[in-house]
Image 1 (cartoon, rainbow, N blue to C red):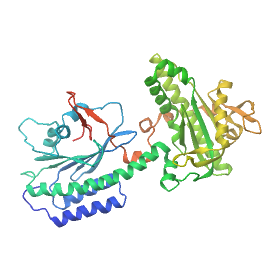
Image 2: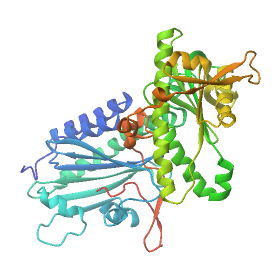
Image 3: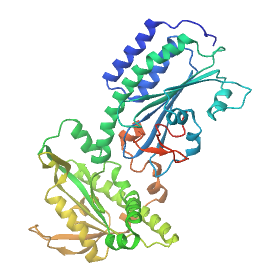
Image 4: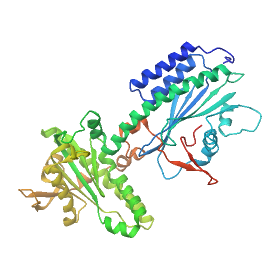
Amino acid sequence: MNTHGADVSNILLDRVSGWLKTAALGGETLEHIVAGFCERLAAAGVPLLRVHLSFSMLHPLYDALGFTWMRGKGVTVEGFRASGEDSEPSRFLLSPYYYLLSNSLDHLRRRIDHKAPAEFPIFNDLREIGATDYMAFVQSFGEAPGQGMVGSWATDAPGGFSDNVIDALLRVQNSLAVAAKMAVLGKLADNMLMTYLGGNAGRRVLSGQIRRGDGETIRAALVMADMRQSTMLAEKEGRQAYIDTLNQFFDAIATPFNRNGGEIVSFIGDGFLAVYPCGRHREPSQVAAQAAMTAVRHATLRMNELNANRRKDGLVDIRYGIGLHVGNVMFGNVGLKDRLTFSAFGSAVNEVQRLQGLTKKYSQSIVASQTFATYCGGEWTTLGQEKLRGVRQKLTVLLPGQTNLKVDRAEALDGNGRDGRSEAEQVMLLYRDARSLRDMDGRSKVPTIARGLN
């Protein structure tokens, strides 16, 4: 592709910038913006072979999001789940991005010499695809350190980037940053709501249910689960070890209830409340109860797997209790005028919470109300009748039989790689939080907008 020295049309570049503004205002996804931008820039005559862009923004579950565009191949997305430490710190520390950040530089340009030793490891990859020139950049979003965009341009033009091409790239860089920031902020708000409120509640808040008292009454199968002996575990294991144990517990037991129509609406200490909304007729109530029971089976097997691994490590089993019920609940905003929570509440929620507490009395991990058992079907054993506080009539408490607890192991453990990710998160994948990476020499803290990406 011999376009070195060729003019790049300012008119077409302005068209690219205009498209970026339109796409951002239209609420397009970041992936759509990156892909459309690169294709239009190449169509305008800019001799691009490869473009990489990586973004950092606060996100509770994810670390980094990167896009790589290759001429003729489109865009691929690469991301990393948030963890306590970088999976490839050495690669990032040897990248042009780290060099830029640690030296407070905005740009770095290098000709790709196919004979000399590679200055950065990424240059070996660029040699293999025939790149002749490379330019990396850092673009701040003008906020806290570490929030912004890093990227790189590579060409295979025989003479590399000409001055007018470099000028064109610098011109459109700001337009790209503005469009990307709008997309990031929009999806960030979406992701944060989905993460902290759940998919259904998050969508309701985004649709305008934001005032105290906003909500509606829905019918749902209800699940209340709780970890047993948490105080003993906290005292025995220590604060951080207990937090890790609690996260293991939620990963194992809670994940199945966030699928197939179910949604965890709130975490309460070391327990959670999940709902399976349904219609008020018999058939939808049966579907919801059976879906909840399927999740119970999966959660039981996952907890067995977790406890088996804990025993191998010399740790005690995590015990738990699950209560199951069907009833009408209020679903909406409650709280103070300036501090609200979006959750499910009402008499049915109180009943399922007290049902869950009865697992201690009956020394069983799972109990259900007669209402739930009737809609769910299958085998059940009556444990007794209980007068619940605040409930006029006695509640029949039942234990699920073997037909209700039999589960296919492969089915129950399927999707471990997707645990805890909402639909919104799967679409956007990842955003980098505003953490900093300490220099290996301990000299400075450098914002790590990308991890292992260049």
